[in-house]
Length: 259
Image (cartoon, rainbow, N blue to C red; front, top):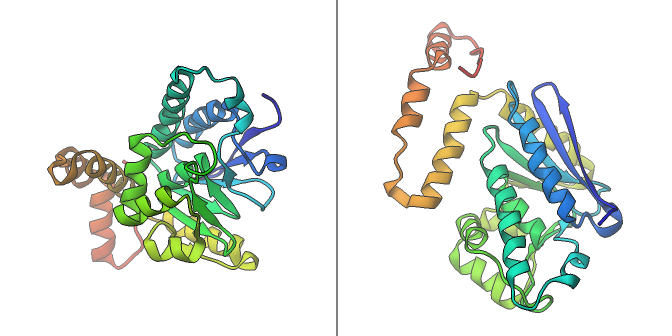
């Protein structure tokens, strides 16, 4: 199905991924999901410090999957299961990026767009942003367990189930209060605040950020029993840790190299 694409641009140590299907509020085609997976190879390149994900056009982050794909699904559920597995692989790949993933949300992040927002490490949103997956009153499908688990981790169990069962959308302020959104920013300040957030992340120790992200993933999968000894060993044994200690004692800014 034509009409949409995923744009990838590397600017120094920042990779910007844009969902470009503005005529359909950036609804994702199957091809766009595959392009998102391919974009992750660029986002995991050497020297990348931050990845930014947003929708094109300023009117929507992503209004889910392009529903036209579902018209030909079989009546036994096999096509739906394969679709969810395909999307799940893309979400896992995005969640597994070494660098922090910042989502910039304008307008709706619903359905598949909500799932994408939930794998972002930090979300910055405009006041008109809305979040939800109202499939209980629209399509009649359901969400896979990993997506619900991520939503519960970000929003809390009670709020997640209430949102899904009532098929309601959360506004930006409610999403911020719940903890899904890092900051709600007026549109005229969005680019400035997003650039400031990206800059602050890029100035942090990359191995530390990668370890924190991996710790979060392991906690989601295994709870407090998650083993992170390898992450601790990697950070404490790194040249960056030695540089950090030396810089602190010398009263200077550390120079991180990611090794």
